[in-house]
Image (cartoon, rainbow, N blue to C red):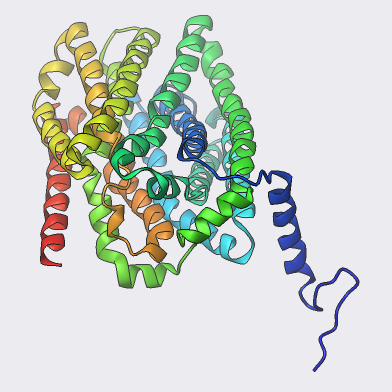
Length: 452
């Protein structure tokens, strides 16, 4: 039977799909360069994308401590208001795996470019929406509901923004330099924290507290929206190139069914998520938790404390860079396991340092950030080689989502709740549990490799 063809050259019934394919092809042709993409160029895309995401992340995290308890939970005392704020903070981590699943389907039906564009626009909309959100005094309980919905929107968008660049970078990096290239994307965390903390420190110093709580806190969310736009175009410029598409096709980095992934690779997803547990638990124990503890129980200047944390983030950058050198010398999994043991030792020092006055608190922040950098630099995808090639794209995304959920999603809520009601010693136990989880996952992974 003959196939009806329209004047545009596409079969009847396929006009919509053809239009989408044409748009994707035009975007690629616009950036066509007829050469290869080097690992260093992929790394630039990874760093830009992750820095913008982490800036968004930390703007919300810092506001959860300094702003939201006062403007959305004024009817509660400060501790309870902060715990409520941290509960909503966790919603993004719960939503993130769902975002990954939803946007993987969008990619399969449309294109990688469409998926990334929609995800980052959703992230920008959710972030800007928080900037314009009326407070409890204006809107009542509805303001809290809208805050929660926008936070869920951020989580769905973060899950959907997975572009496969870290996996592509790992597969295209020289074998002897994989630790080095693996750490590059992790630099986004300390960079994003430094920018976010610097903005809030400046606003706290430049504005009176009433002005800061009325309108000043909204400015970082406007900046986050602008950075998202810049990052979107930077990442699309790389994602839309034919070379990038060719590399993804060669490495079979395409979405797969989540049901099929769970049935075939569920064990690897679980091991991968738990292998990063120590790093992700420490992540919030040295960033968000101490800020909340100082804000509630110390007379220290918050802007000055943020500057100490910025100095810690600089040490975190150094730690991330060193992690690449160490991992290439001793192996990524050995590095991650050794640093989990170091985090276990560090956990015992939490009460003494946090209760040790300004000097002890500063030492906790500086040492904690450096240790975080060393560990976090190799936390992403340390066991992703376990995945069969066809499952690596989706498997790496969901592994990251679950690592954030189990290790970091509830860390501020749990750490503050435990320290407020039972003492700082329970924060040590919480951090220790993360280190034990990492060591157990790496041990199981090694035993399975030997058996196979």
